[in-house]
Amino acid sequence: MHEMSLAESVREIVDETARANGASRVTRVRLEIGQLAQVEIDALRFAFEVVRRGSLAASALLELVEIDGSAWCMACSSPVVISRRGNPCPRCQSHQLQVTGGDRMRVIDIEID
Ligand SMILES: [Zn+2]
Image (cartoon, rainbow, N blue to C red):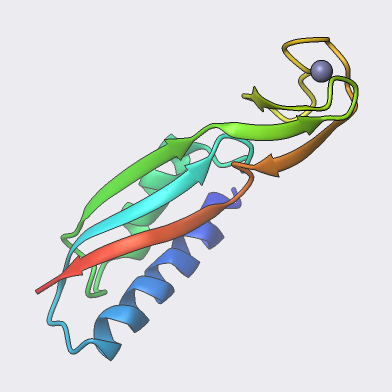
């Protein structure tokens, strides 16, 4: 389950940022998850519950913002939205797509006390 290591890196980023800002605790964490990032939301939530114990984010509200996958279709020369890697272009069914966005996970921001 790679969500466990993802959750650990989120906790590290959050903890480091909070410490650097002199926080005593983190109240909210906002994460952006692209639909093409191959992250299982439920698994990530579960993993975060496990890894955040004892960290500054132990009681933080975890907010997940899902964003659409986007790609450039070479066949119709236009940007398209795809929900899964390997899906064809929704306009022309071509598989000549280049993923341009929604393929990663990142910490958007955190709220601290
Ligand atoms: Zn197309």
